[in-house]
Length: 351
Image (cartoon, rainbow, N blue to C red; front, side):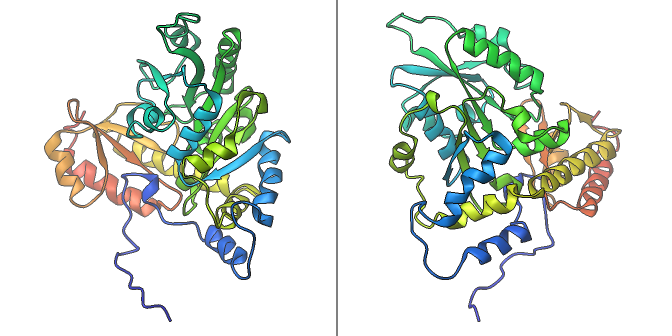
């Protein structure tokens, strides 16, 4: 018998982040399967050895996964492996690596981020060109990598055609392409394409598991070995090397060997669309609902009243924009209760 005490109500779910969700039962079963007995540490176990085959089914036989603890770690290790100390990374102004990683790419990886304002969180070849210059100028951090996020921090998606155009742009300038794929599964589910269709031409992928049902775990997936150096050493130096890595690896095996990744992402996306449809007549939906994020405009006092019963974040204090996230375990009943509260509070005033 355990002495642990359940200290929360497991029936309560909010809309603040897909990181708030619990762990999918199939993931917990996989962890239990990997438990018992001893296995070599630091990735020399049989589960981690099998990961290359698992990721290879989606991203090609050349794909080399390096499990890490979290998304910031994946981005830092991946980008550091792609750059020299004097080089820089072009990214959207809203990119997670710029806004939400406490300066880790700069402080840990020693990178200069060259940010680009975008209307929808997405880079285009034309926008990349605004920072793709200055090679040979000793006063400027040399542009080396373009980093895109799928889906973006604003909930928008890159189509395969848009990614191909960015690949062509980076290749024309001799640069490499990094993808922050913390919600890649959600993008693939919405677009109805395999995961690998969204990474053609991508050199390094940060693949997300935590937002799609894992306890913890992301992976630096090297798709072009020629674009990186020293990933396994940088992973250790960045304190992202798990000793009991079998428990990270088996989670990815459970997620990616079958269709669990797709089921989880499809459900989260469907719940976001359900929410947007239910409240669209009462509030202004401020951005396209393309994955599992809904952005809307609310008066501050309305948002504060709703937040007493339903967790969610205010995205922009100045405009009153809020963000509602759905996850693999969000239920239709959760959505309907929240939507009813929104409609009752706004009475159409949010439009």
